[in-house]
Image (cartoon, rainbow, N blue to C red; front, side, top):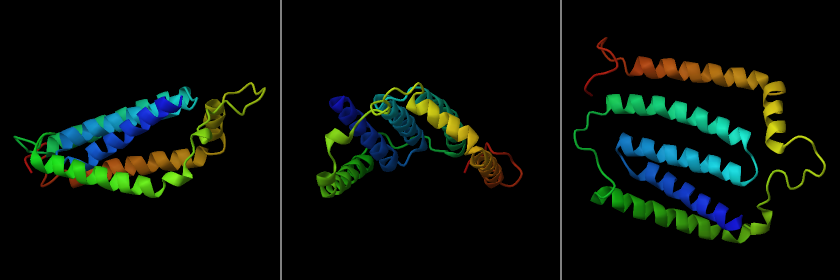
Length: 173
């Protein structure tokens, strides 16, 4: 289990570096999909099954919308690829920064603390992630509605910002 989590966390950091280093929205959206998939894979590796599936579907739906808007507004005939010099330099710089920061905090991490969600359950009849889903809909119902309202407001703000001079959202920037 430890090697699996190490591999997944390295992929997560690699996806985050890919998002941060590429100025093209096409490749950044691909990096976001990789980060969402690997993050949900981390939750699956720790013992959850239902919540990572729901999060992955929600993230993919949201990223599909983000990718559609960024692809519609990006008027780049030749976007920066993974092998271009500025992107490779950004990858090297961000990887060095991640290595230095992780070396600073390396002494506080122990592999014995990576325990699945059901390891300490004892004779519980409810899985750990299912109990979290139940709490999200019972105690956190107000925050769930508030979060949906904020996302709807953000959608209207983005639509208004990309509208331009009444020419529609699909225009050359």
